[in-house]
Amino acid sequence: MRAIWKGAVSFGLVSVPVKLYAATESHDVSFRQVHAKDGGRIKYQRVCSLDGEEVAYADIAKGYETEDGEMVILTDDDLAELPSTSSREIAVEKFVPSDQIDPMLFEKSYYLEPEKSGAKPYALLRQALKDADRMAVVTVALRQRTSVGVLRVKDSEAGEVIVLQTMMWPDEVRVPDFSVDTGDVKPAEVKMANMLVETLAGDFDPSEFEDDYAEAVEAVVKAKIEGGEVKRTATSTKSSGEVVDLLAALQRSVDAAKTARGEAPSSAADDTDTADEEKPAKKSATKNAPAKKSAAKKTTTKKTAAKKTAKKAPAKKTAARKAS
Image (cartoon, rainbow, N blue to C red; front, side, top):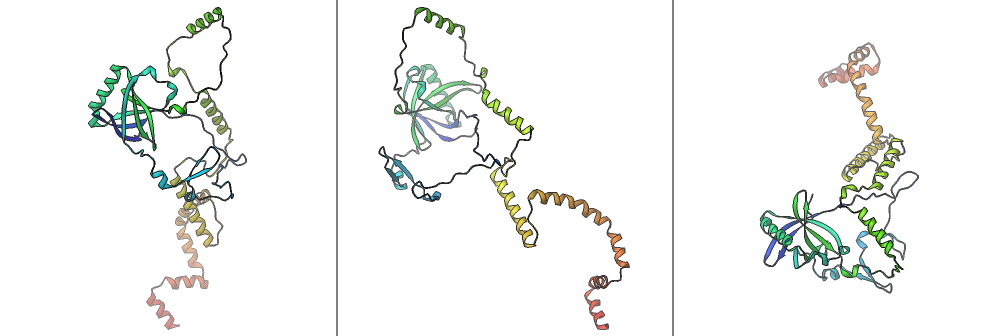
């Protein structure tokens, strides 16, 4: 795990230096939008809705749309005047009973790990929360926005750890705009419902539940791969962007060199296969060198004579010219 934030929890005059870790991660199945014909990924361009022209990233600004559809452009200076969100403090505002907080308000969860210098005050805060059976309501600046949250103690395989759970603001929780007409419920129906609850009563064990959808998707994908139903594209092999770019750069260099020699460019795979095929040929050529050399000696063409003359030392070549 990698810490995503460092700061301190402050309650009263006590300060606890901590590191923040994301406590959850999504394993939801995601799909990419691709061209059905060849599997190529679909790209999107930043186009202005008014003039239809593509907009460079440097020309994109932040805009706030009013209720009547007007657009207000905010500059960097405008954003700089907004309340600062760079505070590195998790400020405890109050300690409240746990049952007073609606779980619907909870948003994201984070683990708090104490720095070495904060081990003792961390243990102190953890024990205080347990003994009081309360949650600490806090304010914290995360991701350039001030949020309200709670601190609570959670048992885990690593021991008891303090968890920060950010919460939504009250106006972000929607109120249902419909009414529920329950009708007339008969006592016998209520009794039967209570019997059903007792029949299904038990303790919660998260390991009893599995993501059947993700497993089904993986099974379908595996079957298609085994059946050869795979679109081979330039981005089929998962790797870092640096390696892919390097490979592409090398391929362009090879193609440019071949074009300069008047040869047709080829793919990296073709170059690799050719190189592999040429290695044994070079070895055999080396072994047969003596035979070729003796054959060359028997030849009395001008070309052979020229080669022999070229192999001689410069002084002898000059002497030969004078003699002629």
